[in-house]
Length: 190
Image (cartoon, rainbow, N blue to C red; front, side, top):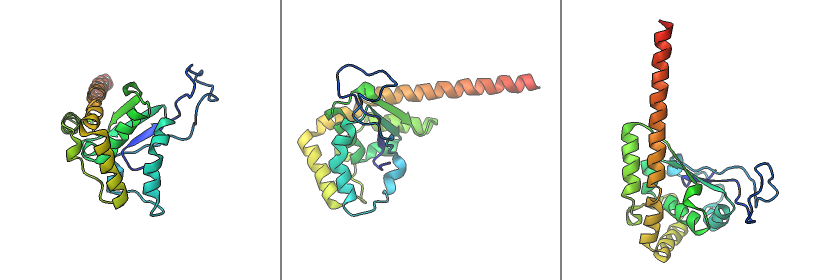
């Protein structure tokens, strides 16, 4: 598990034809899913001083070998630079928008509104670099944004808006269906 806020799952096939679901021989790798969420915002427990730099250096390879990017989304996640860079790197390594799964963390009205606003108004210029990261990673992150261009990073992050909105609507519908079921059960038991 990494502490950036997103996760990569399974491997993308290296060959053009899709392999059957039970055939993993055509997959580049099939390691356990890697999940990142906002809980890591306070800082991960790295075992060595070089671990964060290695993690950054290996990010494109890890993403290129993944078939899905899992985003455990909350408003604070979209205030941070590293998750934005990971979304951007996902797209650069061939990951499609349809291969991103967004799971909102909070589904209450306030959390949902804050999350939608954070994605919609995202601008990399206002994203903060995590203070627990070594200076070298923060420097490289800033250089990555300069190289890619702010508009390109902003566009990829904001492109998540429809997926976030759809997941929030689905969660709201499920909650409403559950409350109707609970009401029906309480009436039938009376």
